[in-house]
Length: 211
Image (cartoon, rainbow, N blue to C red):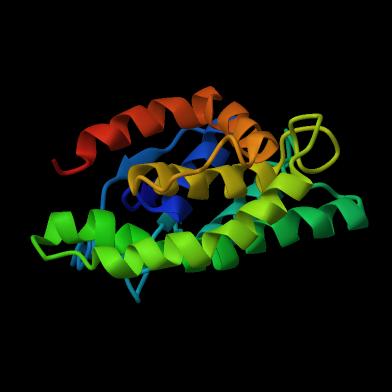
């Protein structure tokens, strides 16, 4: 199996953590913006990361990749079979992939990606989004932060992997997570990111960040 994409992407990171939690061996091929790598484009014709191939099967998008892997390698189950639990896991993945990433992406672009591109960041815009748009999401996180340490069924699922992955980008972008204001949310995220499936990758990512 080959996974294409930069771990600085929350979607690539999510997939890497999922693979690690499953104990699945794979080859990681780093892919940057605008890559013309033929094998990557065969897996992801619109250059969407992550791209993925497993023998003669190729697909892109983290959700599609994980859906394939969960069906092919059902143990340990990271997407529950019970209908209500499964629905909750899919909701939290959607919350992470669409709502959290949607608000964070402009901040990450201005504070991190512009440094890779040698462009002047719009700090005012990033600061405004952090100040106005992130607190409602953190309020929600504080509300749902589980006493058990896991969002669904008191065990690790794709829900935890998806949500925690986005917070790594918040750290890279130096977003103030305000642990004093959101103690349950920040403690929950920290506990998931301390797992080996994340911690090794995060250490490597920090070395990739431009000065």
